[in-house]
Length: 99
Image 1 (cartoon, one colour):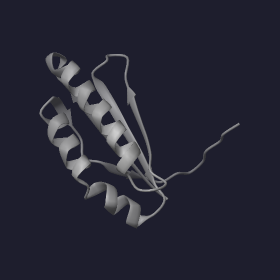
Image 2 (cartoon, rainbow, N blue to C red):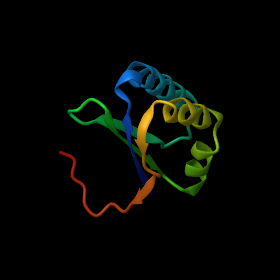
Image 3 (cartoon, rainbow, N blue to C red):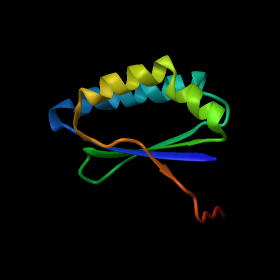
């Protein structure tokens, strides 16, 4: 399992544009993304700071996602709206519960 997290802060005047890019991305990734892909996008209370979590079952699905056209289009649209942007970091799952 591969878990990645990206954090970015959207410029206030670009929030609507960024939210549209996020919506397009989620719809396309749902239809075209590799099997087993999980994505969750969170927003802090400021409404501008976002955390983009993605999980992949293996290296192949991760590579398919990263190398996809929909991913390139998304980051190009989103990056233009960002005040700050961090590189995606890999996370190691230590514990998880689901009841």
